[in-house]
Image 1 (tube, rainbow, N blue to C red):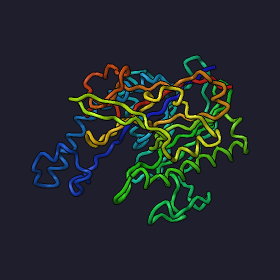
Image 2 (image 1 turned 90 degrees about the vertical axis):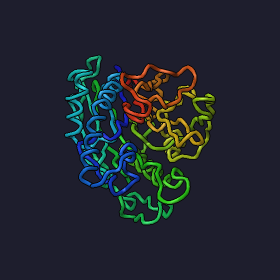
Image 3 (image 1 turned 120 degrees about the vertical axis):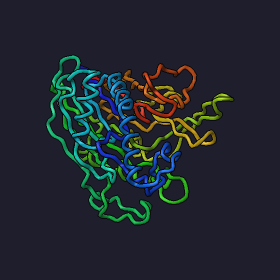
Image 4 (image 1 turned 180 degrees about the vertical axis):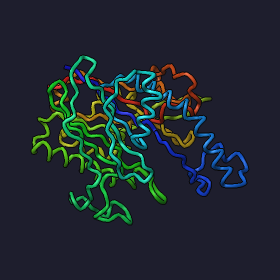
Length: 367
C-alpha cells in the first residue's frame, strides 16, 4: 500500500489586499516605488490592480506545481483562510487535477499576517486505499510555560505565557488503507530578526523551541516509543543544516559549494535518530527548495521545506527518495549543472512564479 504526501509553501495565498506599504516603505512593492503616488487612495487603487493582474499567472503556476507533485495528501503553508483555499482549489487546482482534493483542513493560527497551515486530501489514494481522518488537533495555544521551554535566549520582550508556535503545529490522526499515520504540519518562525546581526542566528532559539514542542507532542502521543510510530513532520521550517553557496554571476558564471555541518534548530529532530530528513538521500547539491539572494555577494540555495520520517517509516521505505518540483522557480534562480528544468509558461525573471519555495513530494509504504 502506497501513499504520496507533499508539502508546499504556496506563498501568500490571500484574499485581502495589504495597503500598509503606503506608510511603510519596507512593505511597499518595488514597482510602485518607480511612480510618484500623490495620495493614499491612488496607492490603494494601483496596488489592488497590481495584485489582481499578477495573481492569475501566479496561481496557475502554483496549481501546475501541485499537479506535478501528484500527492494524495498535500500540506500547505501561507494560506490566508478556508475561503482562500476553496477559491484556489475550485478556480485553479480543479482545472489541473479535477475534483480530487475534497477534504480540506485549516485552523486559524498565531501568525500576525493571518497566514496558516492547511491540508488537502483525496478521499482515496491513487491505488484505491481509503484515506480516513480520525482527528484534527491544533496546538497553536501552547505556551513556553506549558512545556517549560521559556528562555531569555528567545529574545527581548518574549514572555513565558507567549505562544510557542508562530503559526501552528496542525496534527492529523489518519488511517490510510486501515494503517495509522500521524501527520504534523508546521511553518516555523522566519529567519528575519529585529535589529542588527545575523537574522537566522538571532531567531534560531524561537525555531528550536518550536521543534522541541513538536518533538514533545509526538513523544507524548507515542507513549515514549516514537521510534515505533508512523509519523511525519512536514512543512516550511525556515532553517537548514547545510546550504549551497552560489558564487559568481550571470556574466562570469556560477560555482556551487556545499557548506554543511551548520548549527540549526532542526538538530532537535535529527539528534539521536528521532526522525530522518529523507532529503539527505539526494545528492548534497540537489536538496535545495529555495534560492536566497541579496545581490551577487550574498546568494545561496538551501532546503527550507521538509519531510521528516519516523524511524519506523524510514526503515519501511529504505529506497524512497523525495521529488522536488522546481519548474515554478523564476529564471533568476541559478541551477547547479544537470538540474535545469523547463519552466512553466509565462514564468518571469523574478515573477510571476509558482512560489519562492519548491514543493517536495514522496511516496511511502505504511507498515
